Length: 256
Ligand code: HPA
Image (cartoon, protein in one colour):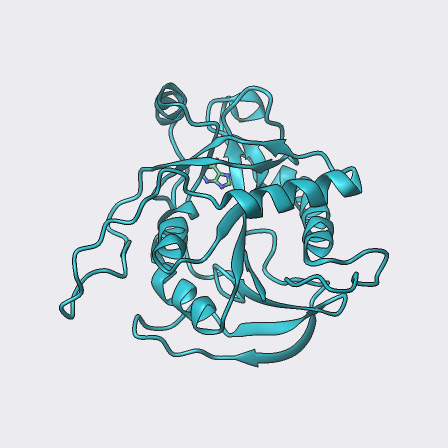
């Protein structure tokens, strides 16, 4: 069953026909909220809002370990992470959807591994390709089938937050090779990898990054809310298609 972690702009999954909610206790504490189980056009799926149902958990306080552990425990077969980002690369405009293929991690002080404590052996997972290639292709194909434009590939810079970046920090991220910036991509991606869970991200550009484009003199999220809202509608359609919806009827023999 596919799991979807929703971020800012996607705190509920309106196309999910909810069958039950479950509060999951984990060895790492509480996940961001109850796991929601249901069906998207007849295909089973589960959903978790990263920032909680009231959008009260800031990026540096999200219990990423509990979230990923809970999804894995409930037999997720893959995780699609949806999150809003700032666009650094010149061609990225608010409302654009990007499927990143690389990450640079600038976060600090977050619990970023399951392999510590309780005599756990020192373990170094391979993270050369941080996002699952097959899942990325499936997202890409779902978008293509619907004629929804998505930018394929991009380097995601994970910053600590919750404050936004300075213009100089964005210049530095660009020099480092980053195309987009967000606050939640890590350690989520690596924790999924440690659990062997295929993980890919759908990033929605909410704003030009600090010092760029419309954000040359500051970032005004409020004026861009409608853009994010509309883009999340497209993301929902992509997710529907990805799980196998076709004109409302799932094809036979496809597993999610
Ligand atoms: N920076 C970091 N995280 C973000 C941004 C940004 O500009 N926009 C949305 N999430």
